[in-house]
Length: 95
Image 1 (cartoon, rainbow, N blue to C red):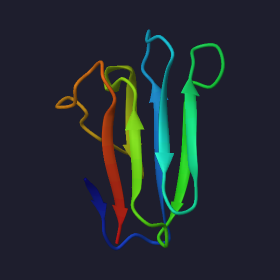
Image 2: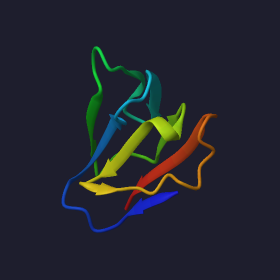
Image 3: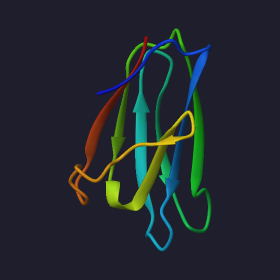
């Protein structure tokens, strides 16, 4: 669980394909959206998603954590404890 308290009005989630990584995907699911995104060296290698402070908890699924970098409001999240080659589930909660 990733909690953010006392945010101004939104939280920005940046998901980027790591250098020299093959394609992978991630998805987000909350009260406003349910989307999957392909991270690709040849197309979109980075996504920036903006979540309102009114957004309910957001579930983030990362297909392979070893292939991505994840930042919330510009701060990198340490994904080293996640299984590198199987889907990982994170919950982003804005308070």
